Image (cartoon, rainbow, N blue to C red; front, side, top):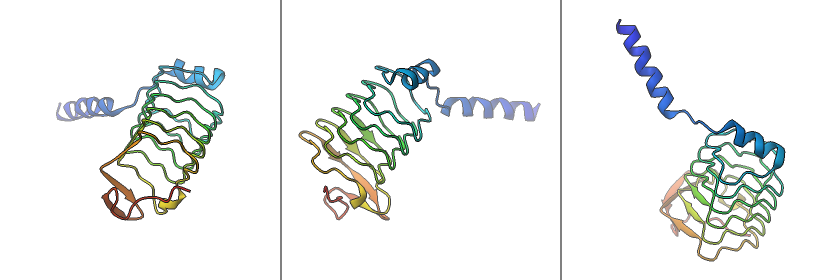
Length: 166
């Protein structure tokens, strides 16, 4: 009886932290490269080519976007909270109003991306803050807030942890 109660409690706990993306939304994105308002929370998109994809107002919380090519993609208003996007390419992407909170942006590329009115909060930039490539990115109204982690240093914005936007 004791073990059954423990198993039930453990099952409930695991169910509450599982990420349940919509498999139909994932399939739609893979086939059409268009999925607006989609629930892709926790989805594994690692290494996918989503060049020119339209993923507006979508939930990509906790998604794995490592090594994903989102060049010229449209992610207006999407939520990438706690997403893993290291080595991802957002070159030329429309990222207006996108939330990057507690997001791993190690070695991500944002050349010529439109980041206007986005939120970048508690970013993880790994060991080389200069690896974050934002050359020619539009950043009007973008908010950088609170602490950021980069190269073993944790401190508020303006305290030695600002990547060089090249």
